Length: 121
Image (tube, rainbow, N blue to C red; front, side, top):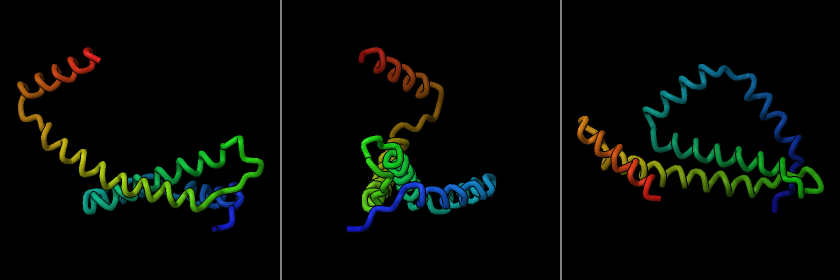
């Protein structure tokens, strides 16, 4: 079992590195990688977002007596995010194939069905 790490000790260096990066260069590189390698990039992005949300949740948990950080929990959440990213990528890509809108008639019918669905609920 890994030893818990104090949250501030881990979060501060990561935050300093992120603040020192150029946002436009990151966005440009991310966009390029997303076009070239969509599946792994979406998976890693999902895992990173799940990991970040777990870090925030652990650091803000008022029930913790001390600010201890559970790394194994972070790895589990990030791994779940990576796997979920793969699943959701296939799901939404498949759904986009079924719902492609070629002309105005399909667009109007899709909007009508969507509005009707929301109204019925």
